[in-house]
Length: 329
Image (tube, rainbow, N blue to C red):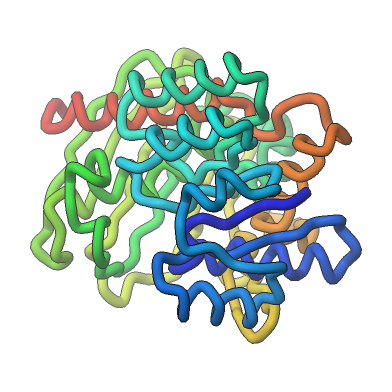
């Protein structure tokens, strides 16, 4: 697969590092960098061993690449994806799929109309910590409570400060990861109450904290907390699930980091503690597994979408429900 990483700075460097690891491990992948700065695009290509670089999106779309990996601002997701489909390119698109259901549905429709492969890059879907947790849920009996939380300090830059470009704030950005995990574990919900707010600790137009309570159709409750306003926050489990026969939670002290070409990045959450017993989780890099799955999908080695689009639509709908229900708790 030949793929151009459009948005090679920021999180795009994580994608490039994972691609370089996969190529070194033998995956048939050829990747290219992109930046509006010729100097930066070339420097990134040299650092990560890319096959070349681009500085103009139209040049990407008229090139021989098979796919684009869009790591761009949320407001650019729909127009850049639609343009890629029109040019006959497959698309891997960073989460969230879009800012609204209307934008999201337009992307899905365009992919179908052009018979092209489309996958949202929800790396938590490929995180072995969570996948192992889902498999072990029956061991704790009837689940009554789940807690997901990721609170840390983040000073956003550039477009992440602008509500219109984000489609909101922290919840629709990093917070949608935790929505994905909670809904995969707990199933459908019947209602949600929430509050989102700016704490003043982070310089941005949208919210930097989101807190919600989900009422699941099973009768269980979910407590959700995500935010960028928490300096010197403690190391706590990112997920805890309690049932009538025990519990499962993540051990934050065993999280996994990877390095490729001198670049260090977060690759997987920690091992699990299941009913008081430690369970080691496979040491797989969620970013690399995500890229590998997309490459297999594009090249035909895998027929089903590795990250089903209906799950990303579900996740976005839950984020929008949190926004709509804000201050209704």
